[in-house]
Amino acid sequence: MKEILIVIGMVGIAIVLLSVGIILRRDHQFRSEHIAENRRMRRDGIHCATAQDREARRRMQKKMNINKL
Image (cartoon, rainbow, N blue to C red; front, side, top):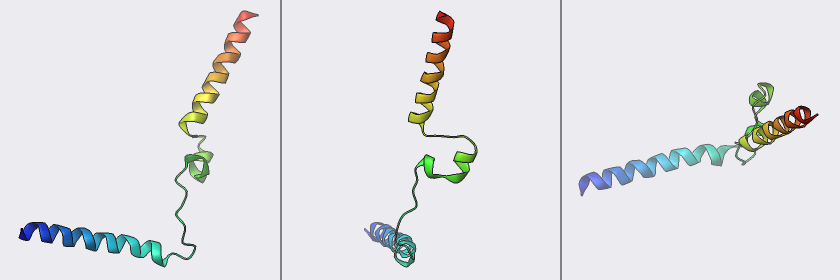
């Protein structure tokens, strides 16, 4: 029982410490985690999986149309 209380206390402290950063933040907003809004990934040409799949399908469609001619 003593170990369970220690673990609960440690988890509680971790939650409090993690929330301090959110509370003290000036804009009170989370950063966007979407790939399309990450400057470095845009620079490297990395997009979300849906966009990359769409581009690949368009490229394949163009190749198929060219081969039919």
